Each structure stands twice: as structure tokens, then as C-alpha cells.
Length: 109
Length: 114
Image (tube, rainbow over all chains, first blue to last red; front, side):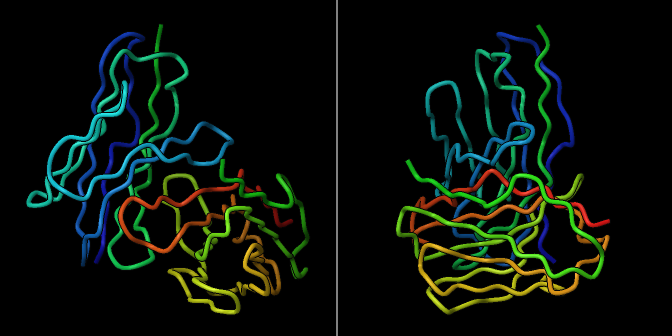
């Protein structure tokens, strides 16, 4: 079957760095997406990886290793507004995304 | 900015009712999707459409149908609502897959079936 695993919940301190991991087993691979979802709001697109390596975008970076079926989202200089759920999704075919259950990130002052 | 608008943020219906959820996007996207989101589960795809009048079943289509008569509008229909369809429903749209074309989401409809 197809499966994406993420930790259910993580806690970090304001100003620190946190890494959210995502492992996947899918029948195909056409890219991996990270989304942020604040409570009660729509998911919003953060990053996309299709080749191995690190993609940096401001305070957020995303890494991909296709051979290991592994990605992580790195958040630096954490701010209270980063408290949200972070969703990992893999495009395994042409249209559909396979979604992880999401990681709830709690930021403490 | 892409705007995906869902007709209601909150909706309460009764068991057995026929329920319509509407979604409109303003970016001329070919693809549109309906998901449901439940605690502890990832987004689960109900139906998607890659063109007007075209539809494809997702992972959990049972009890649902869809309609796409115009490019900008994608409707989800609960034929006879049941309590296990109480959930958050999210609509999304995107350009055809290719490169980093993300899906853009509406704010969701929290549907309660009593």
C-alpha cells in the first residue's frame, strides 16, 4: 500500500530550530510537498522537492532523499506564529497527492 | 493571489438530507479536488476533476457525487447524509500537474450531520 508517516506532535521553543520528518512508501514519485495549516484554516503551500537535496526559502528549508523515501522540513528562528500543523504530501501519479496525517507543532515562549 | 471559495464555513444538516457543498476558484485552474479531513487522518480524496464535465473517483467516493458544469465551479453532493459524514470538507484547485504546481485550498466547510 501507499503510506506517509510523520510524527503526530512536536514541541519547540521560540527562537530555536525544529526539524519535522516525513517518510513515505508510494507506488510512484513525482514530487513531495509541504503545507502549513493553522487551526481552522486552509492548508497553504510551503515547499516542493522533486530532486534530492535541500531547498531553502527564508526561514524554512525542505530536504529530500528519494532513495531513502525521506524528507524533512526545517524551521529556523521559530516564531509563535509558526504554531500550526505541517502536512507532507507525495504526488505518486499524475493528479493525486498522498497525504500524511500532519505534525502539530507547538511553540513555547 | 489564488482564491478558492467554499460556500459555507459551517453547516448543520440532518440524517437522510441531500447536501450540496459548493466551491469556486478564480484562477482558471483545470484541476479541482474535494477532500475530507478528520483528526488523526491525512486528507482523503473523495473526487477530483481534471476538466469540465470530467470526474474521477478518489479514495473514498462512496456516498458522494460531484458535478462540474463550469470550469470554475466544483460541487460535492452528499446523496443521503449520514452521521459518519460529519467532517471538515476541503476543496482545492490547481493547474495540470507538472513541476511544482501546488494545490490551492479553500477555507473548508465544517459539516455536522445530526
